[in-house]
Image 1: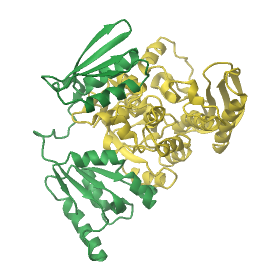
Image 2: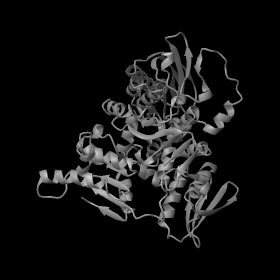
Image 3: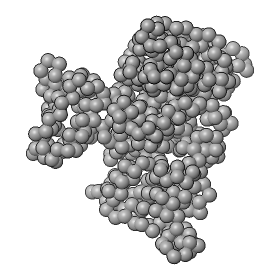
Image 4: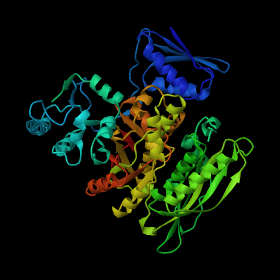
Length: 206
Length: 345
């Protein structure tokens, strides 16, 4: 069992330490957290419950010990009350997810004019792909394809309407100085982009 | 200047608010004043009160103050004033005059810091065309600063929480995550660049957004502050009798916010706001946990959340992009009232 001592620390340090310990411990290892302030205790409990982790709390005076039990059961079944039907199709038994990584404003190498043409054609075809990809990620010169005068902007809009997430690399946007010319997509940092790519079953790179 | 204002506080900015649920409980027994000239009072939980003077003019009245959330006095003054004035913009008004509200421990902090805070407030007020014509100081620790602001609005052009209509699209004008970045700064987890961009958004006036709201006939809006995007959107949905659906992966975020939240850097205020929205909101199955908490992150001097008809929203968005709000994004829409008034998906 791994133990984290958060005594004397204020929000959100106890939560950060708990999160860190959960990451570092083996996946079936219990994690014990010592907490001495009530707000942090309540936040850590809420965090564990919302992330469907099983835990017990024992207290001695002002000190509480939260033990996250991951030994036999692992994750708890979901807490249904919190979730809602959103009108969107629920993912049937976890579909295979496809993510498109657009790393350039041209498709392939060799001839730039041809590359531009191919990329337009790629997007025109991408909107017809069934099932649609779960996300399209734009980085490096790829972000230029999301600007207000992009020849594929309409197609990106169509993808968004189909529920496809569009992520734009913030560092790249700043590098090219096109921050005020991006009508669509969400500004994302490397961490978010990496997580989208990590969770994909397939990655298409035009 | 060497004095670090952050050394005086544990929570800063709008994170210092009383928990919203508790506040509603406290206020509910106070009798509401009855006067036909009162056009907006606290019953719709709006950003400011509105009082009608004549057929052409109504006064917009608001106040807001909080403890330091940055180290530098001048910067604190700029942010606090921006935040206070923002409530007038959120109601569609034009701010005119203001009073300083200051609590300052004269024996514990160099008076130079006091001057710097006021200088910041004054500079921002001037940028907004607001004259500061007085104020009040109490000796108190830790320091707190803000403005009481008076503005005007045409009585028929008031923008409130209650003005959202079914079918409207919702535009957010500033990226989210100031609370998380500031907490990350205290934990030495956010980079100087990330802190800078958070500070930049906090000291940006919502003046441009307010002017565009009038141009495009927006009638429902609020500014996103201490109750977080989710808390303020829920208040709007309830006051307007609609359900607001927000697509969290379209919400613009400050750089670094997502990774900080994922590392557990989630300020206590976000949990308080989560308590508040519980019962009125629901989360789509599969909604990313970090995004859920970011939606509840208390913002200081956040952007405007404006409801606009879908046929006008592309033009409005374009003008926002070209008037200093490049990150303005359509993040959701209002639909007929469902069981939950707010749906995060």
